[in-house]
Image 1: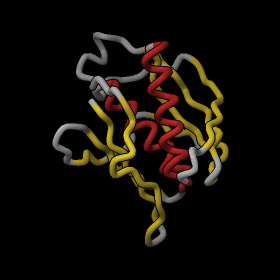
Image 2: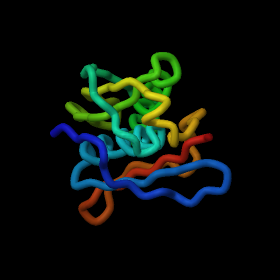
Image 3: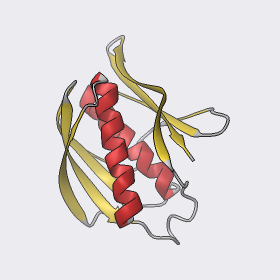
Image 4: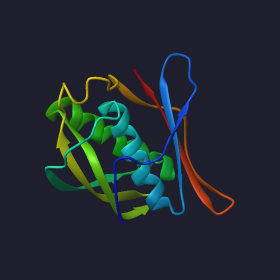
Length: 145
């Protein structure tokens, strides 16, 4: 299933950084929502006009689903830093403890539309998690700003 902005997420109270928490009925939905929460922070809640889809594959750094989520977010931050593109849609095709394959709908960063976006410098391991509890999937990540 393809998820698009906006998606619900919760801001995590953190002293020097910014964090998000998301949940979903499946691990795939939760990963897609995590990607879009990240995009919402970069876009400052401004709309992202999807111009192209790209299939991405990422491998876990050994940390299970948390590691997979971290690897994907780091790849997306790299794309933002080098190409000034950000996700506006996400479909998770495959997800397991070893890696993920996703289709991301990218749009261009627009300084006027996304003026309220945050300057995210890094995806941190601090408080990162991706887990199932009581039949729901939950994930959270803290970003260095």
